[in-house]
Image (cartoon, rainbow, N blue to C red; front, side, top):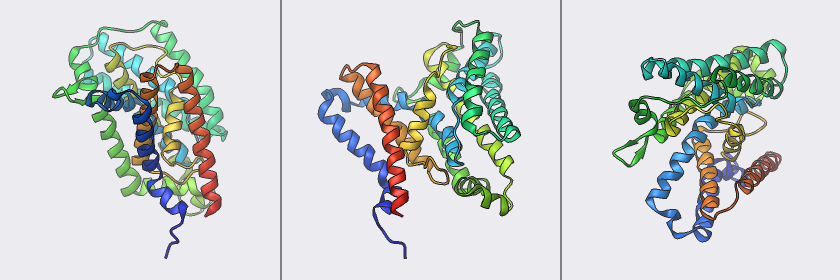
Amino acid sequence: MEKKNFAYYWERIGTLMIFVFMILVTSVFAPPQFLSPGNLVQILTQSATTMLIACGEFFAILIAGIDLSVGSVLALSGVVTAKMMVAGMPFGLAVLLGGVGVGALLGAINGALINFTELHPFIITLGTQSIFRGVTMIISDAKPIFGFPQSFKTAFGGMIGGKIPMPVVWALLVAAILWFVTTKSKMGRNFYALGGNKEAAWFSGINVRLHTLLVHIISGICAGICGVVMIARLGSAEPMAGSGHETFAIAAAIIGGTSFFGGKGKIPNVIVGALIIGLINNALNMLSVETYFQQVATGALIIGAVTLDMFISRKK
């Protein structure tokens, strides 16, 4: 029988406890309109892009790696999708090719480089972060792109019945698919095994290179879809979009209980982690706190979450 100590309960409900605690704290200090239905919808909408990009980052961290290029993949996918629509391509095909396709391609480039060079993902994705951002600036001429059809804006950035934000719908749909992959498929179980012990996974017959490639393709697709949702919300494709979003993605995954050392984490907790970040940013905005302090808070949360993860691991 498993001993039910602090680590046992923390792994199961720790992220939810943090979320409830943050709601209670922010409710005390934030203005009364903080808990209004309109503001809660706003928090969900603002958190949707973090949810999407964090779901992809989750897989990279799950195998004891990292993907620092997600913000640049987001921007490049968004710009390519925008240029396709402006050129007259139907938005559904543009999203499939520019958002999903380009995202998958860029993720595959990351995975292939990691496998070929055998360098740590930190080094590879740090390099491709700069490369992909540079390519985005080149093809967009460092200028925003406008002129999307209204049907596209409604499908990816609008509201259902004036109440449910489409960005949240897309984020939860992607999260549900990835939750199924991690919990119900052999590939998902292999990801956990690879993160737990890479050498043991190899000896058990798992194709380490293939799964490393698949992880980064998934991360790229999530970032690509995030880029599509972002340009639909903003009404323009900005070449500097997603700058710094890798920090929010990593923070959401780590705060959501994904172990930085690999092999542990759950998609639903990543979603809650993204909501925690959205909650904090929204509350600080309502309190008229400078953006710089929001960055301080995010950084402190990452350090605190990783430290807590190390503490819990040692207690087992």
